[in-house]
Length: 363
Image (cartoon, rainbow, N blue to C red; front, side, top):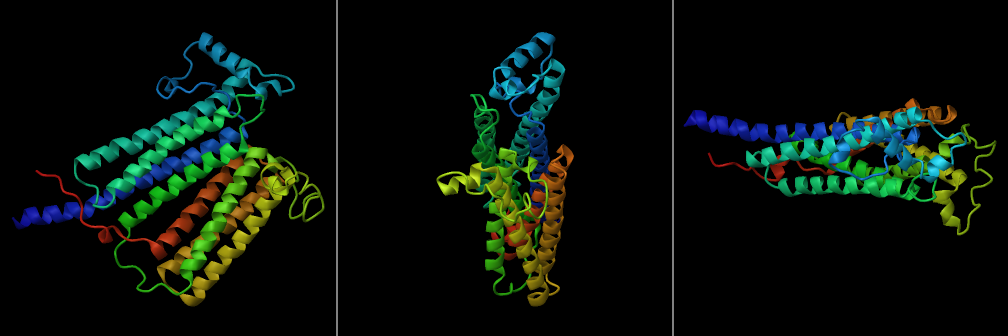
């Protein structure tokens, strides 16, 4: 009996870790998906597939007739008609493969999430209190699939690109799902005993930093959606001025924040600079108020990730956004988000032990 009891206890301890590792694997897939999405955007590949076929669309074109049919659909878009010299079938295939890979990767994430989740449920390995949050994660993933199509469909009219508003929604939901699953994984991995008593003020500082990070990420999405990074490729000025001349060209004035290249790029620069100042301030605070604590270490990682991302952003801008640098900048944003979520969880998160025991499946 003692051996069986010991084995049962070991299984209960191992179950949260196994679930957490699965979730971290899903986060890794989402990370790769976001980078592939950045490449898809930078290569202007997003409108190359004009059909929504969740099942049959997993197969690529298998003969020349199918390639010609898909190419004919693409030639009906405003994006194609805006190309000065048109496009050959070979050039179309190059952009097609990025969009196809992007969609295929989304399907892979769905399978990698649902099948292990169902297995964990069947085996009774999901800790009590986590079943509903994990189903919510699956629902968010399904919503993200719809949001991807909703974004692409905005480019099927006379527009020469997808809507920047829908692009930001699509990117924002992807990052929200990533952060949500990461938070659950950290709750399952981290031991019950953390810093005994977090220093006063750390919660407000981290919450404010996360809010500023969300705004900065959204501003970056508008930069991508309006191709604002392809102009004013100097730093720290914009055409020799700190605030560009065309910042307030549109009326009503607030519309400039989302549609004027000058305002969109300037806002992203400003928010990124404020974010960097906030990250350095948090690291300094952790060093002074909570030296040697795990939270202080997390805040140092946040500052390091923010410094790296800021540098990547400047270099990407100065180089007029080459594809590889733009993708690297996207990856840097997710690394920064990862560090911020880890620090916030260190301050506010609850370990799995605080939610209850592991569900057991009858023998």
